[in-house]
Image (cartoon, rainbow, N blue to C red; front, side, top):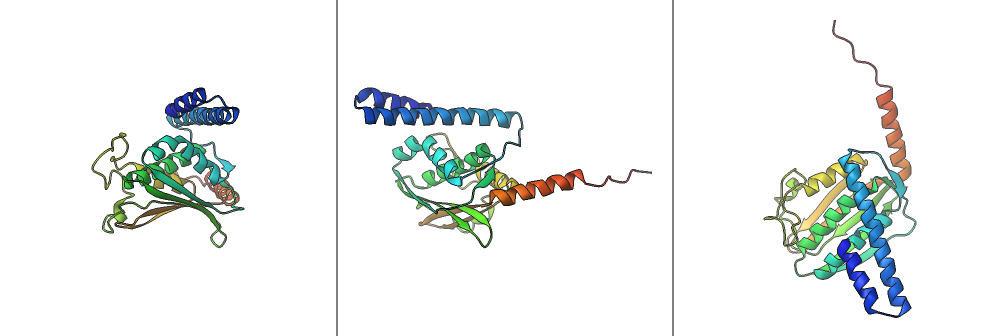
Length: 231
């Protein structure tokens, strides 16, 4: 985030025309706002805060994550292709947690394409299942079929270690992603073919459905009968 701010500050100083400088200032403001949110999110995790869910468009979270990774994606020649359907219901999420998931998925996709290429992001609403879907699809090396059943296991990884940026290789990422998505009453699935790429699909209940599930779970806990005492 700091590199984004620094780079756009330099960019703005090098250009005197108002439109270019306005664009640079907007990018700096957006990146600074994202840095503030990330800092608050890290502090929230440190304090074990599990609350803080709110209704929001999934597209907003995606755009925020792309802003954070803009420099990295450009460096590795990753071309973003967005296919966002209209009139998609909002989701009810902890934005910091879901951004962790999306960032992890985007970084994995970038690492799978060392020579660059298209990274497809698709958002749509499945009215039959009442689920909001986010698909993140790379066109990279793919995952061997025999390894697919294990990729969500803790500390399991298909990588040899961190890449040159120091990211990945611990086997914690996907396990954490699954736990976060399931805590939001969602699902995560993966499809992959060696030499063709991998597609992760995150499926969230609508905000209305998620609120109802959270409310039902709260009532169940509050109304739980006392356990019989030992005689």
